[in-house]
Length: 584
Image (cartoon, rainbow, N blue to C red; front, side):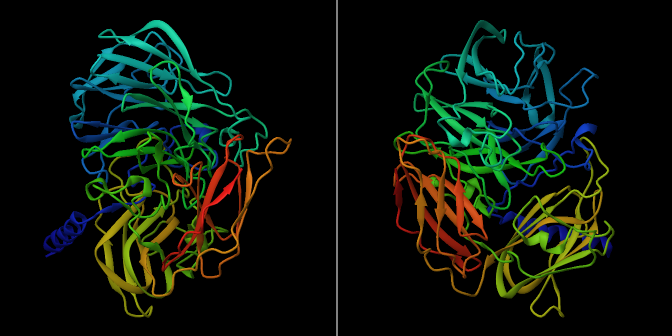
């Protein structure tokens, strides 16, 4: 009888999952824990960053920092982990940092960050099965944050690298098949924080105590042009972003794209969109994967996000992060959509700052931290035992399409990569908080799901949702974001009123790298999206703001005019955008 019940629950899960059309950032993979004792003094925690996704034979391969392996997927939703230690020397307590991955001819190649001449270059013709061999013992140049561009038509391979707040990013051509440099190294670029506000160091781009870092090179060739992508100003900041330079040549002549940063997400539940890679799915559509920041237990506590990207008709490279941590269409369901307008599924957040009840609370890690739309804060139960629970009140019976359950690390015991661990829980719904129905049953789950995202095969209608813990992989039952997506029953907000943008005039001594945006507080709004750009029809940048009617935008380029719009949103929908505002 028990076997029959287990098979029934598994079949129900498979049927529901087969219809899933969306994903939600941060992506839900079994992130490893930091392997470093010095990074764990304030608590052991999951951590990765510096992601690369490469399409090899219509399968996506994802590599990132210190994971002792990699993932692959054919749909960008289900990721299978392959365990593999690429570093052979026992002196390293970690695995690859900021790995470089590229497809060349019939193989996938991997190389990790190093300043020394001690890392091999690996290759595989069958990476889903962990079949790797050493292509070359080491490169004759040490390269931190390396990236490779292979041009098949010319059979040429280029290497780009650098991570510094002093030295430029470099590039060189490699001889084939030897995989060694020609000996000619060219400086590709430096930062110009006096001209580009978003390149300035600090959470508020104020250059308080350090010069900014440039790192995370990646190059995409599109329509005969080379798009050199780079990250700044520091991985621990909400404004960590990717910019892009453009050239007709792979190693020189790069010019700052007028529309920058092209990958930028300083607001919302999970922030940051820097140090990543641009790739195409099996339908030829572009996406950008990059680093998202938590930085609570350590500055290098980070996650991974993926956003739609592309090139417009004028060749401008963009990445759309608007509603970038809400449900987003997967590649198969995004065909023939305009990626520059985003792939948001349209399901709103139903429980922002709504009432919460819990089974217990550990110290000051209060219940409402689970619904405040900030991944840096979290609620923790007093234990990780089965029976701990959290309940959210939507305020009214609402249509529920999807649920994201973001776990936090409280009193975790692991370091490095763990295998065979799982989260187990049950989510129930109610209209009156008395009679409950099971919505999601993962009491028999066998996988590690730190940012679990469930799109319901059939929407349900409830006012209350309750998550009951059945088992944790380690530590306390702690939640940084219990996020319920769907449609409310009320009215969407009115169009924002009195939207103004204040900026210092050109030619003076005042700071033109920043502006002050103000608008009339809308009592019906949960938050606002600010859109910006340097042409009225290219507002590719976006900033999500909760609980405020002002924003200090410190990511501007000094010499250019800007255009802005704003919209309000709540659990019922999105307002019309305001008229476009231009500032010189």
